[in-house]
Amino acid sequence: MALDLLAGPFDIVADGAVVTDPSTSAAALYDDDIGFYAFSGIKGGLLVAQLDGCAYLRAAQRRANAFALDLQNPGEYLIHDSFMESGLYRFNKRAATFGDLVIESEASGYVSNVQVRTPDRYLHIAETNVQFKPLTLVGSWSYEASLSGAAISGGATVSRTRDADVLAVAFSNGTVVFYDWVKKAQVGGVAFIGTNAGAWYSPRHDIFVALVGAQLKVLASSPRPSTISNPVAVTPLAKGRASFIKARLLGSNSEPCPDEVVDWALSGPGALELTQSVTDSDGWAWNTYVAPPAAGGTPSITAEVRF
Image 1 (cartoon, rainbow, N blue to C red):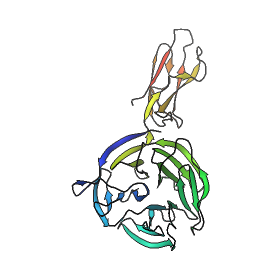
Image 2 (image 1 turned 45 degrees about the horizontal axis):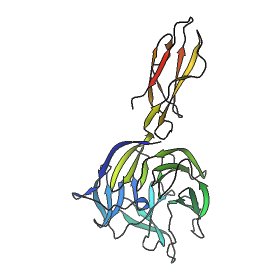
Image 3 (image 1 turned 180 degrees about the horizontal axis):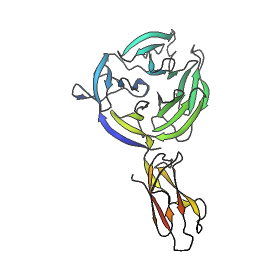
Image 4 (image 1 turned 135 degrees about the horizontal axis):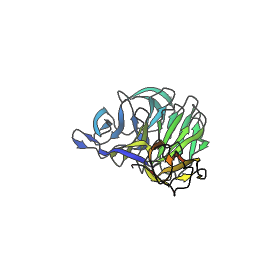
């Protein structure tokens, strides 16, 4: 689904100056409690930005560190020791500081690619493959599941959704898919948000926040309607009979648009049961046409949506 742009793009502005070097992808995050986190070398540390781009320095820092979702502690994150990638720490998102050590090794690259910690394993999204390692991080990344439904390429950012078992996975080419880490399977539909340097779902506001270039965009979680089909009769029209009528609303990527209001109109004989109806989960709007008991011309039924 091609998602509606609700607001933006907004420059990220701190101390009256536009931030041109925000960290991207796994080295940035959006959190409903705090806002958008990114590292800026120009500003010398971690910035927190509001959805309108207004930002301030939260903590001094020398380099961009990758983050990981911590599903063992709802609403919290881990942070990589990104210089050697040899350790993972709890991240204090309120103070923007390193917390307790979670795991480390003397080996360089020991925690590389960790994006999610679940209660029983770590996860990494390698384009169309979901990979896992045990909580000891011993061994190589192993295959867990496949992601599909649209073209997938580029790096992935992972965020929580309103379902505690489901993750939103946004790829830099603009494709968003949803992964149930408990069932170890892809679920739901596919969304399209456009090329980005990171995108995160907001469970509180039911929106996506995307970093595009060095700017923030706010997008709806529902698809933008593009076309509606001509109404068709599910059952043949017959004198004195009621027949179901339907029309389908699709987005620009031919994806269904649910929960949209459709206006119905009739010219000619007979009557429509509804003047408006709401599209179902597959994008169909339904109505009932009642034909007169005697012949009286051909009805013309139209369905419209205010895009």
